[in-house]
Image (cartoon, rainbow, N blue to C red):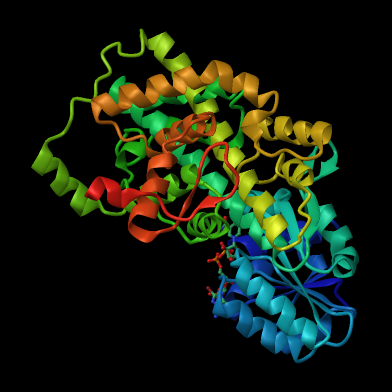
Amino acid sequence: MADIGLVGLGVMGANLALNMAEKGYSVAVYNRTTEKTDAFIANAGSLAANLVPCKTLTGLAETVRPPRPIVIMVKAGEAVDEQAEVLAAHFSAGDILIDAGNANFRDTRRRVATYAARGIDFLGVGVSGGEEGARHGPSVMAGGKKEAWDRVADIFTAISAKFHGEPCAARVGPEGAGHFVKTIHNGIEYADMQMIAEVYGIMRDGLAMTAPEMAAVFAEWNDGPLKSYLIEISAKVLEVVDPLTGRPLVEDILDTAGQKGTGRWSAMEAQDLGVPATVIEAAVAARSLSARKTERVAGEALFGASDKALKGALGDKEQTLRILEEALLAGKIAAYAQGFDVMARASETWNWDLPLGTIARIWRAGCIIRSAFLDDIASSYTLMGTISNLMMVEPFTGMLRSSNRSLRGVVAAAALKGIAVPALSSALAYFDLSRTARSTADLTQAQRDFFGAHGFERIGAPGIVAHGPWAMSAG
Ligand code: NBP
């Protein structure tokens, strides 16, 4: 009998199954379209010995040794409910349903409660790292009952990425916590990717650099504080020449970015929790605007294209590239501060007790946002236990002291040249607002009281002033 079952042999499921098989587990696999299962087994090579193909979900449930752990890795949404429901009919006490897709954590909370009422454990497990991660070591963020996680922790730990030997797999909290953390991971990923794209835009349009030149810059940055998977692949992407045209492939890729929901969910959850996650919001909005290609083309015809050449606005090319690197670092600090803030507030709100230091540690390898920077965040959590805002603790405060001027310079130069840098601009505004002792909300509060009698607090005086004497000015 198999040690574990897996439903869904798409990109992620197939690679997770191979990863498990390689680590010595016997895996029963099922896919809705049976031909995919056959092709999967046929291409599995020697690992096929550890794989048991099943033609039906019932067959899968019968093939896994009780207590059965069965991983569902299909398109998020109704498909998960459908597969879970069929499997649950064959389950008995101790069996565990594990949704490893990108579920909305609210769906996971519902499923955990629904199945708990039927005596079935349900784990919501975020898996990051794409195809390569699933095959050779993803970052694994689990949510659900501790006893249920303990029964499958060995398998997920074995298949997870390792950072200097430390597994990047952990239970981060109860019920939907794992999927929530994965969602915020993806929100931060959106922010990271957008800021990299903005800096690429400045190099391409402001400095007229070629793709190979930009690839070399990203490759160089990958040896510094920005060292990360996303910077590394940016360099690699820009190096690729299209065999069809002989030109850099990136030049022939349509400039409209897709999105599947996790970035938007991050922004929505942040709003719901009252946490400013403006860099993530800007990144989500930038993808939405990118999709409006026709409107953008019409807009350029209407208003004219701006002259984007920087013409030394940030110094010579070498200086400009150094400033861009620092600006990206400053933006990154703001984005991560926001992401961790959202998780901290969620943890408080839902009593999850999210281990933020552990989350930083399991993001250091395997996942898409893995970076040297996350090791710094992990170290800060180890040192300090709790952190109210990453920007306000070392080494990030020191980094921001020196890099915020570069972020300001880049945002200002880009604005004057008509180069859109929404995520970097949001990061700068977040930084500036976060260190403004006297904000402009005094006027906002006065306006609210003027038209809505919402009251206000007077500086240095306790209590709420029920209503200001606004009628005096009207008279
Ligand atoms: P794929 O698109 O490669 O595969 C989708 C799988 O879902 C296939 O096995 C498909 O079966 C199955 N499926 C669908 Br679609 N509708 C179904 C239904 N109604 N009933 C049963 N099975 C159904 O997706 P993927 O990239 O492997 O993603 C799987 C999950 O992992 C998603 O939640 C995704 O968001 C998440 N994820 C993806 C990545 C990534 O980088 N791709 C990373 C992390 C998480 P079929 O073969 O019969 O159509």
